[in-house]
Image (cartoon, rainbow, N blue to C red; front, side, top):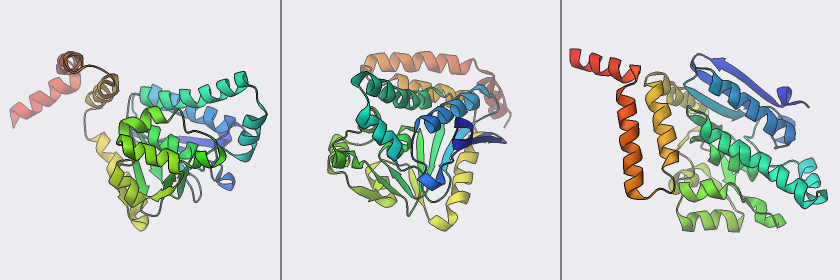
Length: 254
């Protein structure tokens, strides 16, 4: 299956919708799907009308991780080949952070292993109440290595340790409690709730959201004074944007 068919993308109003389209494989990750995701994200990022990107999975599950052929490939590859393969997934995670607008994972069913990593890499994770999350890699001697850079920033150290070393699945309620996801919604209202949630991005300043996203991630690892100065710089830039100028004018007219 080529990258165009394993990932379906469309623009609906201000929202770019990206669907993992391997339902017969529980949307398992392979080279084609990862390439398709990268292409869809780059296309959405290049469209100035897009206010948010929503990633979903076709069928019952969001993404079950690597498929059997990908695991077979790992077991037969050289160190150099495995490094290149890992680098490709790492580039996807990094790309999500470089997309200028919010990238939202809308999770139904299972998000496991690399699928959980993909969800965690998104800026926002929304889940149906029945969704399941987990990093079962340790059960086969594998490590959810790249996503640790993100997971460690999302949850506490002790919760990250438990998530990656026990290999256990957790439900959406627990995932929300520990901070792995932003919000869980009841299954029968999930699509409507996701629509309402992301629609808010059409009501706020696109430039302000873009500047906020870039600043938030840019501050990673900065010392306090450096981060504060970075905030000063972005604050000054935001004041000069068209959105801010118009927003202030509207406020003053009230």
